[in-house]
Image 1: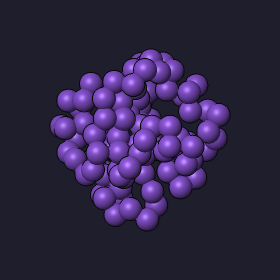
Image 2: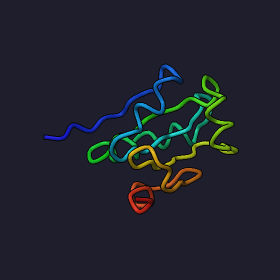
Image 3: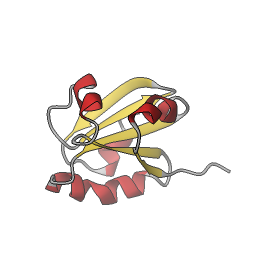
Length: 100
């Protein structure tokens, strides 16, 4: 039985280790961002089938710089630690699923 989850990044040193296995949707967001809050139910739906990692760009600016986050929300897809695709802005669950 596979258990999917939404995880909130709490330590930048965990990032690579978290996404190294399986498919991960990484949500680069900010607490002050209204579209980011509106995306939460979409990510909840996605977490029924995939792992979701939430990364606050204000807390982890090094990751935001590394992945050239210019706008939030930005959702990146990683498979076994390798970048696959991304979506920028508020989108539907169907759009995110098509990123794989």
